[in-house]
Length: 271
Image (tube, rainbow, N blue to C red; front, side, top):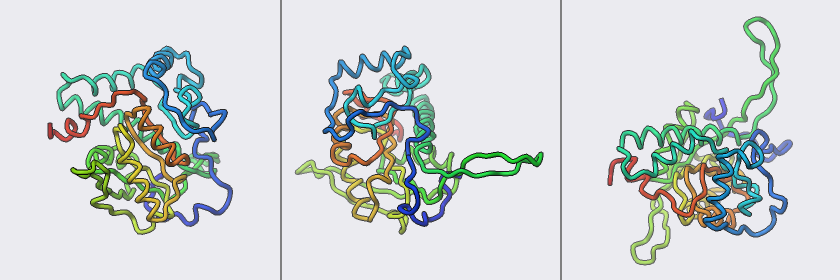
């Protein structure tokens, strides 16, 4: 399984795995440049092209268009994803429908997130005695949810990886300074040797994620081993995160200037 609960023996030995090998996204022609957030008009125009299939690589929103680098990856847009996004954003949606659609979208993001993990080739024997050449995911992965809204994504990850370990981190804004502060953090003891799926559904300013990544780095984890799973992101939030940590992989379904910041309250029924 891709998320078997076992320590990663050595993430630095051997040939470095390409985390984006099986993902169909455009590559940036100048990944070393400083990210520049696109305008809302540019985002809306590209989103329309994505839905109409006029963008390259299966309709994926290429980082070339957004100038945010190759580490930004968006799920190829289709009518199913757009409907889920629409229902989640609709203020008249009941909580039951909201949770149902959010869980579906979370599952899609988690599945694509797992596709970013390193793997190796293997050969197995089928029940008919034939040899089959396939792949197996490397062990030593874990999840980390940023409380509280990030906890909404935990079940989706467990549905795909039954034995995966999930850490938690609580970050809140100081009432006086409005700066993000860490109030709680609990990770697997060997997190510095793992690949981490960091879960946070809504990226608005990016400040909370930046603080969470800094805590993970303080625990010995390298940024290149972090895959950030998000449902919605603003261009500003994505730019802030990737400018601070250019080696992180950021996976989301949408870039839009207005993020559905009501997500956590509606999902957990605390409106």
